Length: 189
Image (cartoon, rainbow, N blue to C red; front, side, top):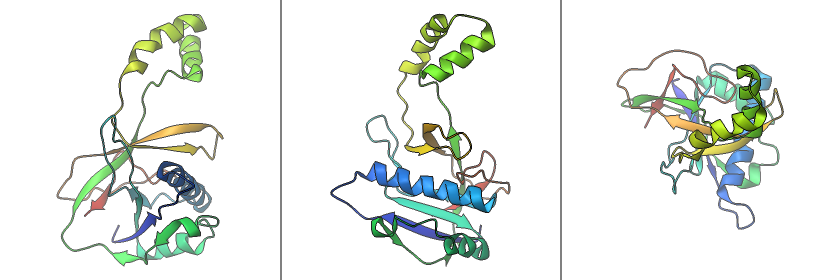
């Protein structure tokens, strides 16, 4: 995690920022899947939290080794997005940084598929499961998210992203094909 690349969305009157970030992040997910990468992390340096302000922002930062980031960028994963992004070169991470875990958070959003699984798991009727799941689904989620489609299942879902507390030391670990990890840190600056 000694290098990074910033990819910033250009403003576009035809597409909202959230739609562009979802498309960009979806393309990154497919590239990380195809590359079988577990050593590239992501962060959203301009993210905002809060029920009314939750957004990942307009900048996606990729973290990894110089060689691995160059390997990723040699792939044609940005096809169709080049007009919508400003791409910076691979750069070394600054000397004085902190670190944080950037991970996925899952919430009960009251989806029918979740209620169906709950009903099957607990041996109850679907209507009963939906009723039981209404209360937790009512809470307001303050984390930023992107709408993505899973490469493995094809399902479209909201991927909620939590930037953990800053830490003074890095923690090694692996990243999933969304560039997120529940244990590994990325440089934060």
